[in-house]
Length: 125
Image: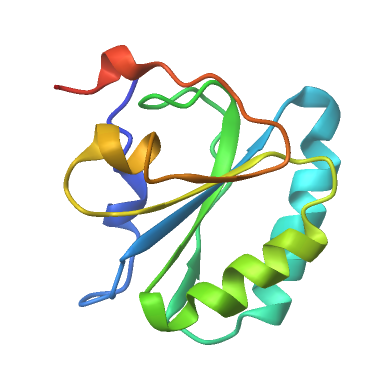
């Protein structure tokens, strides 16, 4: 598995990355994921909302392919409410980035859709 902070290399300089939304998909949901990502790109044109690339390999604790949306607290309501309405059958994990990956991905996390089992062995506790 690769380092799960892959998106940080792609973010604009000085990007206010306070939250991640991981949008998960499997092979049968690939078209839905592409469509949702395109809708996100069209809807969130503000450079303070970053929509990452499709990641078709397992990284970090994540159990399936995914893409991320990164944003600051000032965009939390807009992004999360939009995702609540638009996610369809895709599962989404939303969490704050506090520096404690385990807490961020567990008790401080918010799920939309089905909750997926993460691989917590990837975290240093």
